[in-house]
View 1 (cartoon, rainbow, N blue to C red):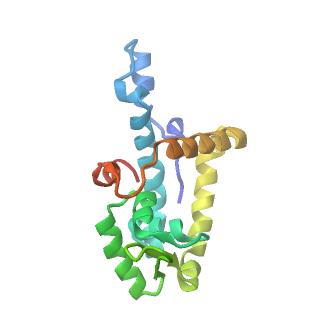
View 2: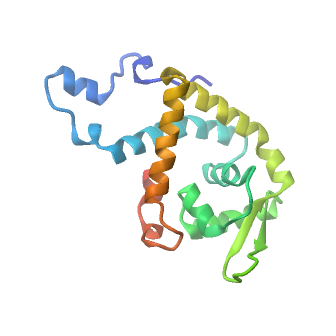
Length: 183
């Protein structure tokens, strides 16, 4: 599948900010507002890969869960909902289906009976292994125009932003519009 590297590689489709600047107009608010830029970039880049995930038999939500659990330790359902940018009841229903397919397993928390942990099974890890390779290839194509150092700086900045603004599961963000704004 061919993915555009950046806006200028899409013939006849200049970006909105370029249009407003060329016309001597100030950019629209959303063309210089970080949350809007992050949401747009996320939607565009993620949508390119979501088609690949669907072709490999995973819904977008299933892909997010599997990618979030792969290579890591067990996490709470609340934390998984936060990382996958999905409402907790949706994650719980999704986990029911994935558990029936033996892709994930639920575990009790060591000290808090109210918390259920989730981890990927060996079968689940194997089923998503090739898709994760394809995701890394997609990521490389997306970041290639910026160079390795700028790409790593961008990722470090985004991780720091997440750390600074993350709320624990169950906080006010739980009922937010985050699911609608990110992909």
